[in-house]
Image (cartoon, rainbow, N blue to C red; front, side):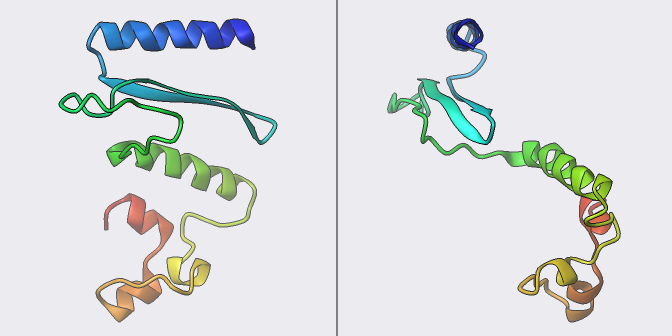
Amino acid sequence: MNKAVQELEQLAQKKIQENAVPGLAIVIVFQDKARYANGFGVRDVNTKAPVDADTVFQLASVSKPIGSTVVAALVGEDKITWDSKLSVLDSTFAMFDPWVTREVTIRDMYAHR
């Protein structure tokens, strides 16, 4: 793993030097434990505040493919379906309309319906 970590660190530094990103964090999880966590570069180009292992990043649209991958795994394990209602899965779930709150499904949310 040490060689892989060194290569990741070099890649991170290279991307920062190329101005691809101002900063990033890398975490390696193995057997349900964080084995490596480190930050590179800055989280704010104006203040030069550094990125560290505890820096929180906004995921924006990146959360959709990550979330759908988790959902697909649960569907594959027959724990839920794409048509599972959110109100059944989470009793605290609420939207603007009572009918929508009761009826909206995982599929609806990912389709933006």
